[in-house]
Length: 205
Ligand SMILES: [Zn+2]
Image (cartoon, rainbow, N blue to C red; front, side):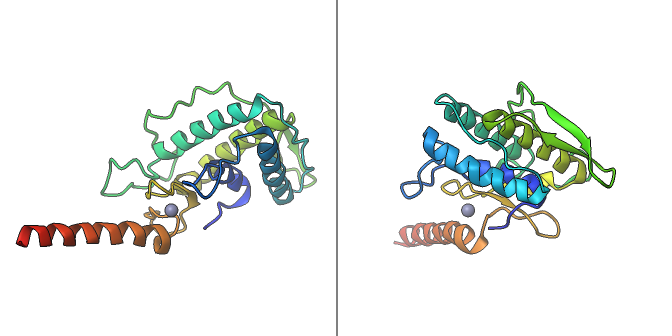
């Protein structure tokens, strides 16, 4: 699966904590597994940015809040045309801020960040807080950066509803709909062609 560039992979990681049918459990189901996930994701994020790994401890109430946050990001991404199913003709990528459907329930409480110049004088956003606060701060920072640099509309969810993995579309015209065309594209296409065949055969008899 294509990973989103820079720190945007954190948003992708969050969405991909979801359960996949019977074989992959929801990583945010309980405190222990959520903490384990956050430690890994925050560690990868910190390596990319050359920053310290935050304190990733969570409270018993945090996993539910993280699952809500995940839903918010899923809706945000669906709203960018990743796969709303409504425009079968394909989403036209926009170069600017991107089009947003009003679907996303984005009325978040917001998050704080610290702005600090690095040694070369470039200002960067440093997430603040720990645990869940840190994650929210990092997620919204990465979203802002991706919306500014144009990578945001390329973060999508697989059109195969049983999969719905978040992936980064690297196709030239941003027209990808499957996280992996071989896996999900084929499965869906195969099912559709079987269905057509079945209908043809039942119609012929
Ligand atoms: Zn898929």
